Image (cartoon, rainbow, N blue to C red):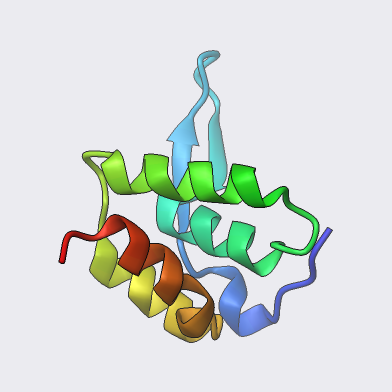
Amino acid sequence: MRKVADNRFAIGLASAITMFGHTVRVYDLERTICDLFRSRSTVDPQDLQSAFQNYMRSAHTDLVKLMNYAHEFRLVNVMRPYLEAVMPA
């Protein structure tokens, strides 16, 4: 479990409807990727890389939002090698 400062709690917060029709609060894809990078010491590196590659292949990729979140959580330098690996030159 990770603690989050109150001013960062709402970053990426969205809502989704479950298959039973209930509305639940969730984080968007970009926030989830940032949370994986924040927990990289406890996440298998192969899982982190796979999640990032799947995100980049997704039709819902929003790199501007991802980099804004990365800046907010101070992850830009950590994410940069992953971005350089998957982005065409």
